[in-house]
Length: 301
Image 1 (tube, rainbow, N blue to C red):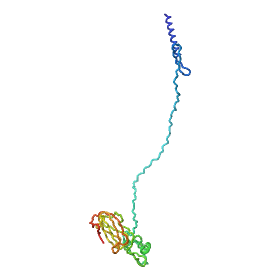
Image 2 (cartoon, rainbow, N blue to C red):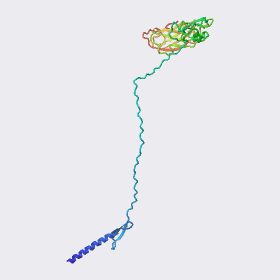
Image 3 (cartoon, helix red, strand yellow):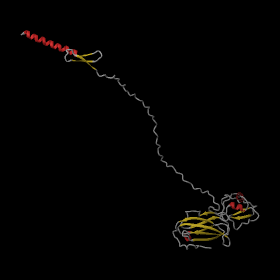
Image 4 (cartoon, rainbow, N blue to C red):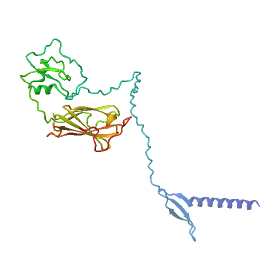
């Protein structure tokens, strides 16, 4: 009995040893790194070794570590704050446009006084025997031309304080032996003074003064065309001005057109041209009066 058990143990040990030896020959690595696999060939007790290639792994190159470098910004520029000016408690004065009143219009004078201003201590020239009485629209330069002298000589010879100030009725000493002959008719260029052409400042009520410089004629005819087309006419002698009542003759509202015709003693127009047309605008009078029909004069000659 003991012999039988021993034989079984010895046989089992041999079997286990054979299996261990076979496993050692089935798998082992070659020097080149290839793996050999042992396979049993039918009809042969010796196993055949088959070489199985392994996967080639490409070399691995690690990427460079990206380390961001810190960029330094320039320091900020500090500017002092702009100071807001404190408003002034004193308001500024805005200058207003001044009207120039130093315009000299020939024949147009200021307020007339009975006694003109003269240079104190001065005596008029006694060697000048002739005299001239200042008329309306006269100027010192026109008087000097008439008597063949200069304005400065008239100022000095009459002790005048202002060469631009002479008044109607003033008697001036003038040079010469006899009075010059003044032609009754002389075609002087026209100049309208009041109301100036295109005026819109004519009052609605009261009076209006027509004043002009033009041909020297014994008679002048003023012809005014009202806004409704009717006419107003007036004849004046030896003057170049006339004052007319607005309420009585020019009461309508609108634009008026007026002319001046120089006439001779026979009431015919002389060779000089008429003055105009000139216009002015007038508001409606507060107490208008009926006007005459168109084509007829308010006051004829």
